[in-house]
Image (cartoon, rainbow, N blue to C red; front, top):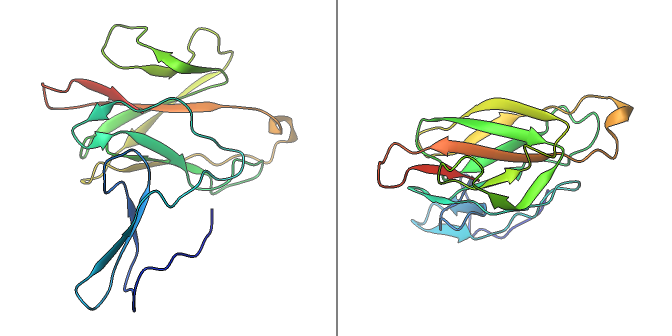
Amino acid sequence: SAGSFGVGTNPSSVALGDFNLDGRIDLASPSPYNTITVLQNQTTPPPGTYPYGYGTPGCGGVLAMAANSGAVVNNSNFGIACTNGPSNALGLAMITDSPSIYGTDAFGLGLVIHVDLVASTQILTFDIRSGAGGSGFLPMPIPNNPLLSGSKFFVQSIWLEKAASVGNCSS
C-alpha cells in the first residue's frame, strides 16, 4: 500500500528487498552524503491479502512473498513478489482455493507446503523466475469477472536451491 517514509536528505533512489533476511520487505534509500537509510519491515499487506504460513530458510534467508497491490476484481496490475530465493532460478508458484496454514511435507522432499493440494477444488501453477539478487515477480492480473468477488486464493512458491547443503525451500 502507498505510504510516506522519511529516508534522509536528498534521496536519489529507492530499493525494496529483504535486506535483513527476515522474510519481510524492507526499504532502502541512498543519499548524496554517503549514507543509506534502511527502513525494516515498512510494508503492510495490501487490502484483500494477508500473510499465512512461513517460509523455509534458504541460502538467501527466509523466503517470503507479498502482493504488490490489492487483490480486487479488475486489478490488471496485481502480482506477487518473492524474496530471498536462489539467484537466477526457476521456481513454481502454486495457487489454490484452500490453505494448509501449518503446512505439510506431503511429498517427503524436505519442504513445507502451505497450499492444500488435497482439499482444493482449484489448483493453478505458474513458472516464476528470480533475478541475480534472488527476487522474482509474478504478474497475476485479476480479470473483470464479478464471479470472482469474495473468492479466496492462496499462493506459495517453491524453489530448488543449487547448494547441496540446503536442498529444497518454499515460501
